[in-house]
Image 1 (cartoon, rainbow, N blue to C red):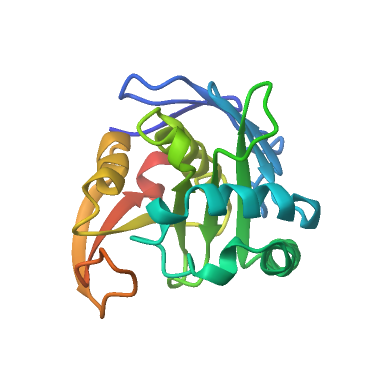
Image 2: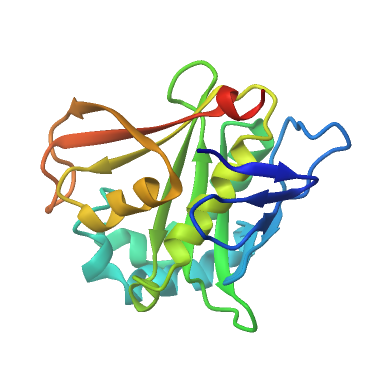
Length: 213
């Protein structure tokens, strides 16, 4: 089963709300949209001015994030570190190597999570990554954001495969690609990089070409 494109609307066969992804007239693009409307909020391209809200979200969620995210160090909670990260993220977007969004609930400036499309995973492939503020876990935000970015990735002209990688111990994270219709393609061994990691990655694959007919 696959996402079904209807103009710029993407319909999931798994009962999720449709998502509107701005696209070109031809339907294929060289870069994803900077803003995507979701049922739960808005995904907006990360900017250097977002450093404060990002630092606050990481600090509030630190005990939750540090278990699974290698980058969730003491330093990541600080404003200066996030200024650097947000600035570098803007540069990587312009270069076309990484695209990072922040998810904000409707009517709220708080950062509910961060979602990204990352290219350094092989020719024709792109990876969906995500983390969610501790106050928003198990409320559908991660699923909605990953769903939207899968749809956005499928509109990139050079993308043949979309993947999500989860640690074998992170059952909650692995439930998201499964819910969206990704298939478990293979496992990869690597040394654990965060306290709760098993050292065994699950690689979930979305065969993008199959959706394009």
